[in-house]
Image 1 (cartoon, rainbow, N blue to C red):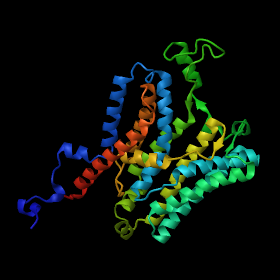
Image 2 (image 1 turned 90 degrees about the vertical axis):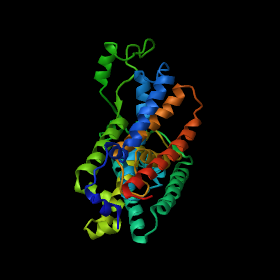
Image 3 (image 1 turned 135 degrees about the horizontal axis):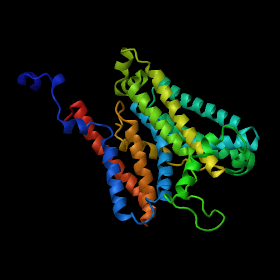
Image 4 (image 1 turned 90 degrees about the horizontal axis):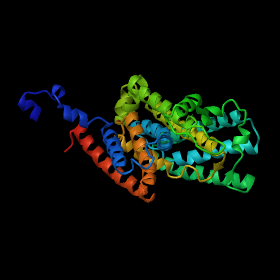
Length: 372
């Protein structure tokens, strides 16, 4: 006889304390980590310029990079799958834009759209292989990590005899689609803020009088847009419920009429979409594509999602939590520089915070499932 029966209390209507309800919120780890990180750098790097206008923009841009790929990784992980090919997809997408737009001299908008179509097809192929073979997505996407990285190196070497292709900015000059990934918005507002002394302006040289921040890069805009769309999709739509169900118990979800295969393939495609957005913004910023772009980004995305409270077993997580995990990454990476700390310690931090997040998530899973 169960304890609930002997005590006369139905487990389904058993009241939970506020502390217990707070502990099982997926965003808890991300919120706590964000508060701790900001307090630490306010204490040790407040006078370094980290929280001046230009410093804030620096770590906001780095955080936005993590956020874009973390949103896709989060939804896929909640659906119960992993994608280790994200970093290679970033490098591959950037190289394809350079090949189509610079080497073949196609209009940049065509190069961008074809690259998106190609990467979405590769994401769908990833998902289709996982579904049809029953292989773990870890293995399938690990294979694609090497396949895509190999093509990213082979293609430019074969065509141009080099692994970096430049000239993207010139090729994108006057294009209608490129500004959606490479432009900056709000320039008049920042100029006004500089004129009234709210933000710093250059004091000498050809840029004297101009604000140190020209505008908000589209990379940041894309990050915020994807966070909003991902959060609303996950929490306000039936498809979001399907994502949770597919990752929680796929067989039970199928028996309930959830199109699990469709959901999983769609999430692989969305992850590829996020990686391509990152890649297009990156090549527009640097004006070139390199075969080494995107290295280790897949692991950084997964770590951000885990810090944000997603369970490695699927069925539980939060886009907001993943965004906070990405924010922690960006703040720490730039904060170590501002604080004058050896940059290699950033990797030490990643390992420690991943270990702590997994331990916390294990505790949360036991609370949810009632495991001992």
